[in-house]
Figure 1 (spheres, rainbow, N blue to C red):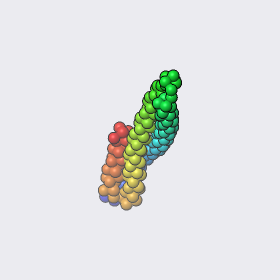
Figure 2 (figure 1 turned 30 degrees about the vertical axis):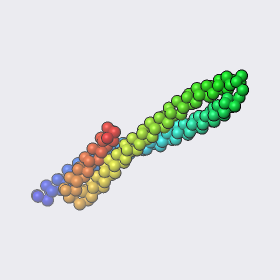
Figure 3 (figure 1 turned 60 degrees about the horizontal axis):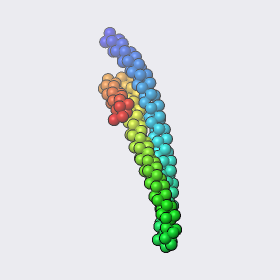
Figure 4 (figure 1 turned 180 degrees about the horizontal axis):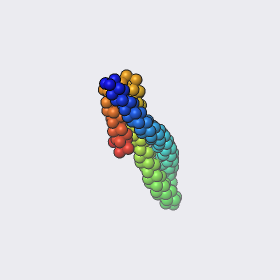
Length: 177
């Protein structure tokens, strides 16, 4: 009689663990998908940062070429006869304005690059959270299988505990913490 009660108990345990394992596996699959998506975003953002950084470097090169032309115009103005000084000063003024415009563009591109880098870092942090959550849920599923095979109640509790920690890590990832 007590043997039958034990059997009914383990049947209930088996059904409960099977249902919980299916739920954990589904949640784990969603977390895995989110982990992959955030990793892809991090790569895309890092690429955008590199593009902006390259464009900024190009603008700084352009700025440098205008500075060189301005220096040459200043040198020419200083050596030129008085009737030519005004023409050279006009060029110097034009180069100064162009340099200021180029500088503003370069600084904007550097700021964009920095913002993309920060976004990439945030996505990678979130990716790691999703990966941690997914790993914890996978270990919980393995514990569920061992609990079913061994009929050890403490392994079932451990499975619930690990699943809870995994879901908590998933919540942290979803909240960008």
